[in-house]
Amino acid sequence: MTTPPTDRVAILIPALNEERAIREVVQGALQVSTRVIVVDDGSTDATAEHVADLPVTLIRHPRPMGKGAGLRDGFRLALTLEVDGVVTMDGDGQHLARDVPRLLAAARQHPDCIVIGARIRNREQQPAARRRANAVADWGISWGAATPIADSQSGQRYYPRAALRLADLHAEDFVFEAALLITACRELRLGVVSVPIDSRYEPQFRRSHFRPIRDIARITGYTVGRIWRYGGILRAYRDAHGRPPCIVDPPQDAGAPRDGLPAHGAAAPR
Image 1 (cartoon, rainbow, N blue to C red):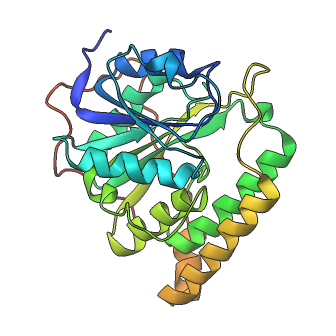
Image 2 (cartoon, rainbow, N blue to C red):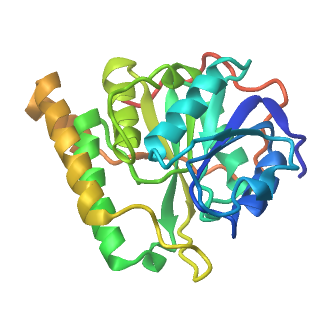
């Protein structure tokens, strides 16, 4: 089934030195949404030039400022548009635009939720060190959010419009994504659902900007601080680890209607 692109959801692609993959990623995104935002985070290669002729909004940072800054600037721009939410995708080709309609289908079922494209298919393709680091992050961020989360480190996510207003959170780089999950769950009372997607770690992908030891340490420090700040430590742990994450698996041909996503609907999983 072919679904016409929607203008009610923006696709946000932060990119740093992604000249090998960015054009294909953006072209795929344009098949899903007429509103595609690319944030070039101070690339020193031809990332920006490779999308310059495409109908996208391009934001360029004069120097690398980290993924958090890219998401923050993209969210601020999206808030000025008449969109119901934003889907984020990494610029290296690891995420496929063909999975976005499945995320949007899950968002229609759970409109008061952040939807994560969880890399739980073919998980054996993930490098062992990355798989262990992600498991540690899932355990801690779930506790911080007081709700179970599958693949808290995935960059392919749907954020409802309410979550975009968290753009000014004081967190940088990869910590920003953890901060979004924790704050959205704790303070906005949003839920989290996950849609299974394939793990893709292929030779053509550039080396990840994520550094497991450094970045997990930073995320852990932030998360511990949030757990302490919110209090109810044991209750939050039980809420996070007393039940499995909410996983929904719409069919591959799930489509997004042109009139966007409903403002209300099924209750968020808590």
